[in-house]
Amino acid sequence: MATFARVPTPQSQRESSRAKLFPVGPLTSWRVDYLELNSHDSPHMKLSTRGEYGLLALVDLALFSNGQPLQAKRIAERQGIPKQYLDQLMMDLKKAGLVLSSRGRQGGYQLARPANTITLWEAIATFGVPIDSGRFVRTRGSRAQASRKVVKRFWDDACLQFMAALKKHTLDDICRAYNKSLDQPTYQI
Image 1 (spheres, rainbow, N blue to C red):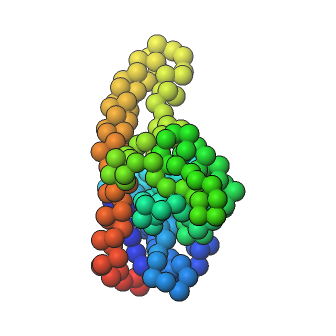
Image 2 (image 1 turned 120 degrees about the vertical axis):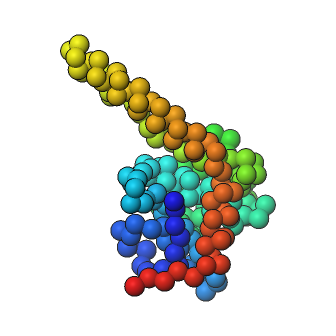
Image 3 (image 1 turned 90 degrees about the vertical axis):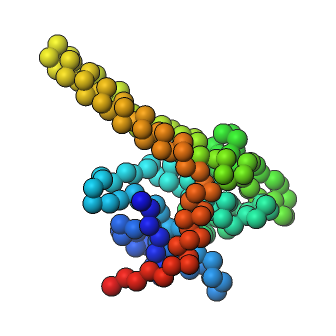
């Protein structure tokens, strides 16, 4: 389960095992630092940097755009993403039909669809499939091949369950969890 904490620490400290929210400017706006799914019973599930930053950009748009375009510069500042890198990601998201862009002084990016219709799978798959089961069948030998095929069947089943979970959750789910976390104080020792 992704957890959020109000922990004002320097941006360079990214080694915590919980998602962090850092203050942005004098306002009470907080940015999501990163998401890491972690519990005692499950292994860490990591995204590629492209997948993570792309998902964070979409969440930022869902949280802060209020139907108006957001400039990439503001998204990059809030999420701690290099602006040039974010520009590349936004082009990929635009090609995937997840964001719209507008030019001009009041231009920027906004979600192409409501946040409750954009699944986490769509967001992550834009930057490449996050799981791959192909390597289980690459070795030769009848015994090794047979055991690999059995392992691959189980792995494929786990991958399908993972994909189903990502397809079930939307950007809106993340936004609701974020807003709920703002209402609950978090204490850290």
